Image 1 (tube, rainbow, N blue to C red):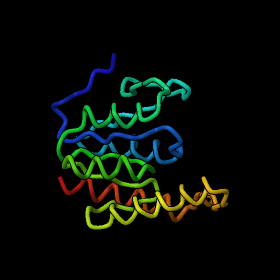
Image 2 (cartoon, helix red, strand yellow):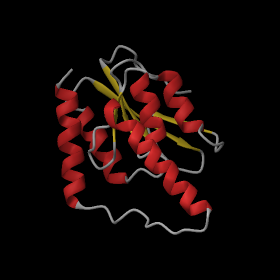
Image 3 (tube, rainbow, N blue to C red):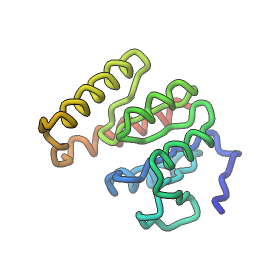
Image 4 (cartoon, rainbow, N blue to C red):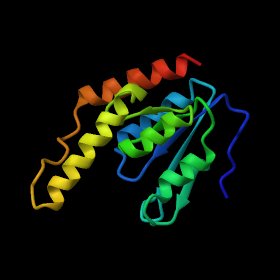
Amino acid sequence: MLDISMSAKRIVWVDADGCPSKVVETCKRLSQSFDVVVITVANFHHEFSGDHHLTVSDESQAVDLAILNRLRKNDIVVTQDQGLAAMVLSRGGVSLSVSGHLYELEEISLLLEMRHAAARFRRAGGRTKGPKKRSAIEDRAFEERLTLLLKSE
């Protein structure tokens, strides 16, 4: 069972299903400089090691629910999932994309609407482009934004 240190000022939750390994490594490296615990959460199809990993079932939304059920105000959630980001924001958490984009309450409705429209388009037989290859610029942007967030507390 995962032993979460609730004495840490903040927890950085990583939605590790499909998260780039470079992002996970960056989170863990930065946690050593700040009073934070990094917890990766993934379904049992992904292999993670360490004391701060939570393995959940492969049911739809299992990772999201595991994070949301444990989230504290001002905790940081790293995710590519805009739906999870919206729920994190509504609970007083901070949500950061793997490319370093800080999700804001003012924009999340539009992002969710665009995601829904793209899903409808695909269901109707349309094709959309997949994500582009991760760049060094995204790696730097993520590290810089996470560092700023960790310094702000």
